[in-house]
Length: 73
Image 1 (tube, rainbow, N blue to C red):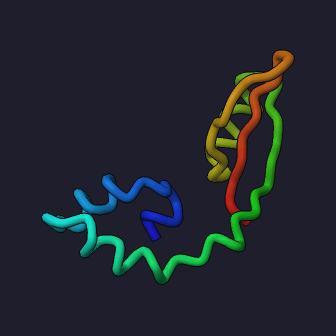
Image 2: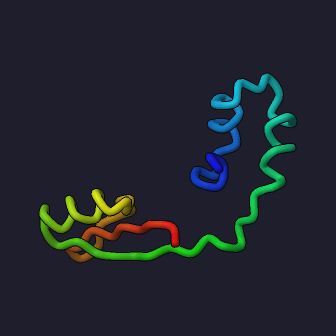
Image 3: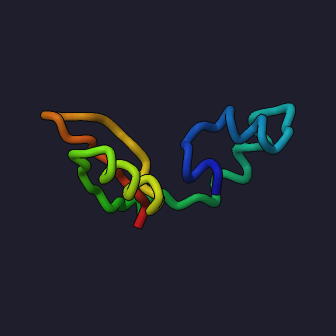
């Protein structure tokens, strides 16, 4: 699940305590990335930012004064 969330194999290797990345890769073969669908929302104010973060959205970037956030479906 951590690899599905971060897509960082070295981070997962460290979290699992594996000495060899090949051991970690055995587990990550079970991850299905076909369902990488997100809900995307924008925030224009600090209050909207707070509501999105509380709802589980993660900040991605800012464009034209709006903050873009996403959350897995």
